[in-house]
Amino acid sequence: MSALQVQDLKRHFGGVRALDGVSFELAAGECVALIGPNGAGKSTCFACLAGQQQPQSGQVTWAGHALLDLPPAARLQRGVARTFQVAQTFEALTVLQNLQLVRCAGQLSWWDRLDQRGPQAAQALLESMDLQALRHALVADLPYGAKKRLELAMALAGWPDMQDAPRLLLLDEPAAGLAPEERSVMMALVRQVADSGATVLYTEHNMDAVFGVADRVLVLMQGRLVADGSPEAVAQDPQVRELYLGREFDIQTYKA
Ligand SMILES: Nc1ncnc2c1ncn2[C@@H]1O[C@H](COP(=O)(O)OP(=O)(O)OP(=O)(O)O)[C@@H](O)[C@H]1O
Image (tube, helix red, strand yellow):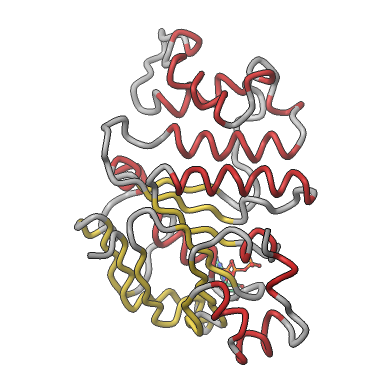
């Protein structure tokens, strides 16, 4: 059975149909890219899955549980974590403090000292995201690539500790604003998260971050899913080539 089931999701803003009956499924451990032109509905879809927005209708089931009635924090407890198009971090805190804050969200009282909370778990994440050397740097001073890696680490830090808990990671343009070299570092980290057993859904406009990384590609246009298949099949899809990728698109350019 699929880990994530999205059925007939509809989200309208007045006359704008941001999501116009979107349905798809993800298997556990799959790494899937959701692509499409600006305004296609990708961010709206992520917001409906993670709980920042409520669709007008439809159903979302994750690991056997209906998600749509749960607030974002409860979805996170069920293993649904997300990042945003523009990295959402606490600029006035250090890298380590940002991670500690996520680790103990909802458990801090005013007399607690952040520096004494959850340093071991934060440490492991710092190492896996290559942020160890920057752990005491203020986030405001970080280069953007490090900030994006920190945001990814913060999403992972929010997952429940229970071993074998189902984990869904929603990444809204994880490589946006990064130079090609930083982009491939970031996408290798994303791939690593999926290879460790988490289910990953991400959106991207950089085609190297899509066709060289994803197991499967979903294409959204004007709020409707118009293609769902392997990167090779989607790259050959006449409608997707005509309306988004371009007739000259060659998947070989983007394969590692
Ligand atoms: N809060 C809002 N109020 C009104 N319209 C909105 C709102 N949020 C999104 N929209 C509209 O819904 C449609 C889908 O927007 P969305 O941001 O989901 O697209 P997207 O595929 O993520 O685009 P991009 O690739 O540019 O981030 C667009 O027409 C957008 O203008």
